[in-house]
Picture 1 (cartoon, helix red, strand yellow):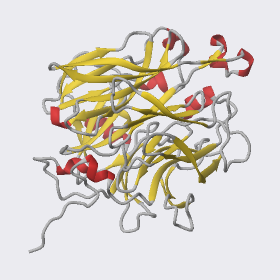
Picture 2: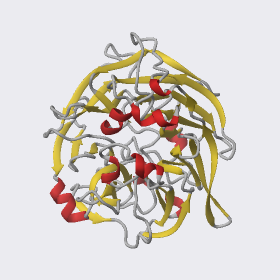
Picture 3: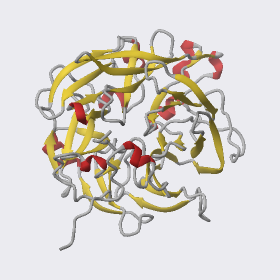
Picture 4: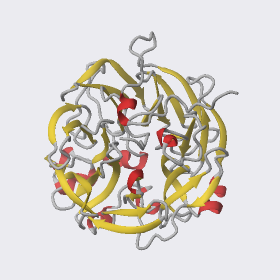
Length: 462
């Protein structure tokens, strides 16, 4: 009798994930900025021993044009090993790829040749709307009982935003996740503490607030997201809301501790209306309740108004615009992408209440336009989507945020790239000078690593 064996890329513990073989391929969102051709998921060789290291070795174009791919994720991951998970036989095989503009969701099969993924299913926006009530799908996480996808709002461009579920095997939309959302209306990211039966969600804005660019008046009036929501994961009901204050606008990426016994995590705030700074906040559980505290603040950099894009000229400064963060699988280092100033920062966070800056690289930026050892001339954009290898030694990033926002903050047009930093085990960053993927007029966004990465998996054993 043949035995069912779990996918070898499912890891029971964070430590086991860190000891797994290194990734050889990266899957990367590839955008046609003029939307004249279909976007694609490109496959990049990240094996330093390969003759095609740092090159595109395959791609899967979408079967439609006019959209914008953004975030995506695996169909299954290490949460399949949790006690009681009903789908332990699934494989980390399919990429679930939402389109934030058109509301399509494409399913890509990475077998049998992982360098030649194939589109095997597309969920049309009409079906998504009918079955879930949501549109503009965004973030994907694989849970024990289904594929969770966040959505910014409804088909008409308003809220509320929330979470929908796809079936693990058929990829059919099952419906809206929330039973009782209480006062939650804005939505962005979500993640969970499986061992505490708690899901967290964050806030950006409704589709009509974000898809034409930043709305200056709405921003100055504090109408973008400023809260964290805590939910009963099994009961699907809102438990508690943590308000970060009206000056803190756009509460985005949630990065919980990977150790399932640790009930804390980090979230980034893009902009303070008080001084244009960005900040990192820590949520944590104490004496049975959840609290939140600012633990990192990154100031804006003064600048002459004529050197700035129009949206920033009244302020005379370049904000850091921290638009992504990533936490290493051992929960030791937090990576912070400053898309506005052009910096990748590394903080030691073994004590999450007292982060310590341990590394910093400059590249791109609204004013800095810092270069790279393998790139001729200055660069723009800045570190945006960040992904960390399971062992914490390699940090990959791209430089496009979101096409309507790219045009506001980098009106000259972004030259797309993907770069890689090497992380020292005791702290510190250096360039991998042999890795720089120049995309020219095209853009790149989220990265997923073969076999999983620091923001793909949830673990159920400490």
